[in-house]
Every structure is written in C-alpha cells, then in structure tokens.
Length: 225
Image (cartoon, rainbow, N blue to C red; front, side, top):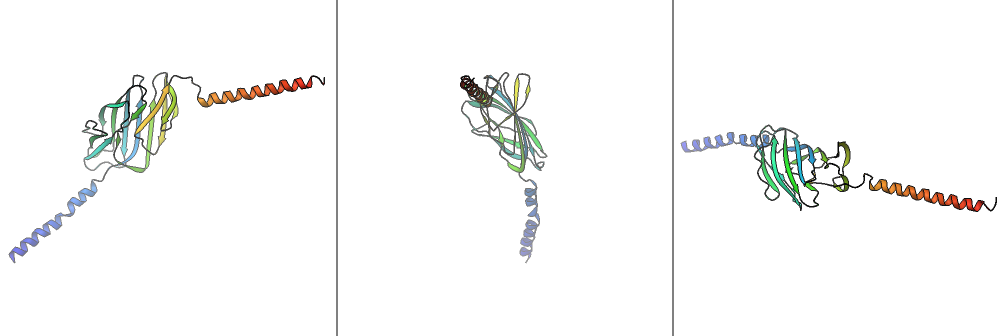
C-alpha cells in the first residue's frame, strides 16, 4: 500500500507539472511578418547595397531561430550579410540559407546585404525571412539606379519612377507580396520611352497622311478654277 501511494504521488506530480511546458510552448508562437521595407542602391560597378527592415505583427516572447533564404542567380553573389538591429547570430550563406536568431522582444529587425554582380547581370536577391506572412502584409521596395542611368528593360516586380535625386532615378514598388529577387535593367538610352517614341511616330504618320490628302485635294480643285 505504501508503494501504491508513492507511485500515485509521483504521477500526481507529473500531471500537475505537465501543463507548464505546454503553456510555454503556446506563448512562444512563431513570428508573423507584417511589413517589409526594402531599399536597394545599384552601383555601376556592380557592387550593390540592400538594406531591408522587417516588422512583425507581435514582439517575440522568446528567442526564435530564423532562416534567411537567398535565391541563387547567375552572375550575382551575396558577398556580405550583416545584422543592423533586432537580429543576431547571422551565419554565412550556405547554399540558399543563412541561420540567424530573433531575440526575445523583437518587434522589427534590419539586415544589410552587399551584392556583387558581374557582366550584364541585373538581378538582386533578397535575404527573405522564412516566416509566415500576415494577410495584411505590406511591402515597399525602392531601387536607386546608378548615376545617369534609367530603367530601359525588364523589371521585376513592376516599378514606377518615384522621384529623382540629382542624377539618380529612384523607382518604387508597393504590394502585398515579398519577392525573392528584384530585377531592374538600366541603361543610358534616350529619355524617351518606347511608348513616347511610338506616339510621336504615329503622330508624324497622321500629319503626313493629312498633308498628302490636302495636296491631292488642292490639285483636284485647280482645274475647276
């Protein structure tokens, strides 16, 4: 009987102590991404700088390991990935991943990437956090082109020219999805876009047709006079 009481007491202690780890696990919920603000500065040399700030829906209640995913792209290499604030222990990029930690109480964090592009490569990979995204996720991306350059080719995602800082054109994209890669093909072609050139060409053709019509009409009217 004494042995039975001892076993019962141990089981009671386990049962009473059981809910505590469950409650802790519930408190340490996985972080959810609410906002991303990405600023990319492109350099003619191919040495680009990316500074990205990510905001969470709620502060972390415990230290959380997180993976940063970096998509590979030919002719492009992430030469440096560093923590600016709110994140620690960023390791080197191995394959497509880099390990890091979000300390307890983290509401937002900022990382900085240095990119080296070679040849005609224009893609810039982002170190995207492997986190669930909130339904109301807001993403803002700005791309500052090299001096004297303008957007002349493909872009991903679609950008609008926001403003110009001296000789640098600044592009902007706002959406609810975070891309893993940003592409902005720039060059030194004429400031006239393809649409503008097409419009002018069409206008010239219309004027030419009208002029021919007028000349033909006048010639037909002369004999009557």
